[in-house]
Amino acid sequence: MSDVNSWMNQYVRAWNSNQPGDIKALFTEDAVYNTRPHDQEAWHGHEAIVKEWSGDSSDASGDWTFEWTLLGRDGDTAFVQGLTTYLNGQPTYDNLWVIRFAEDGRAREFTEWYMARKDTPATPN
Image 1 (tube, rainbow, N blue to C red):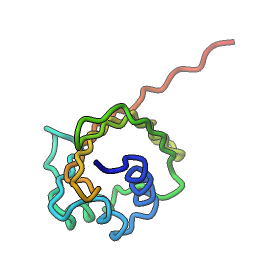
Image 2 (cartoon, rainbow, N blue to C red):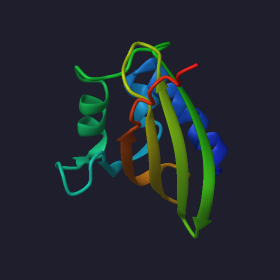
Image 3 (cartoon, one colour):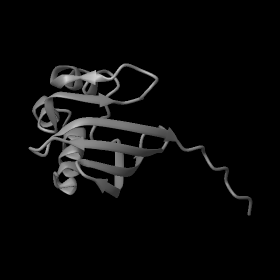
Image 4 (cartoon, helix red, strand yellow):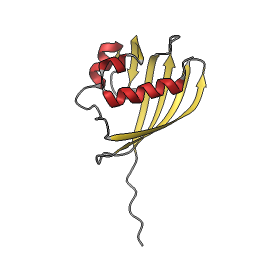
């Protein structure tokens, strides 16, 4: 199985750059990327992944921070818990990713679930 740390570092690099080459390097040519399983159509293949990733709703570099923890592995599959904190007034998101790797270390399937955290009210003094 792939080195998850290396793949995650490449993912964050691609997230920062939004460059097609960086994005394609993460995935097999026929990869499936599920951003909201059971709620919207998955992205199939390099061209669709690059198009959707770098579309109008892409995140600008420097507008967010991301922390992650490897929850576990099972064969060619890794489970990652993440925390995305936006610095531009958007909500903070808890993330759960399931990444299925091909033999060459690229992802052949990527599924993410994300939930916005509710704002916590200020504590009275």
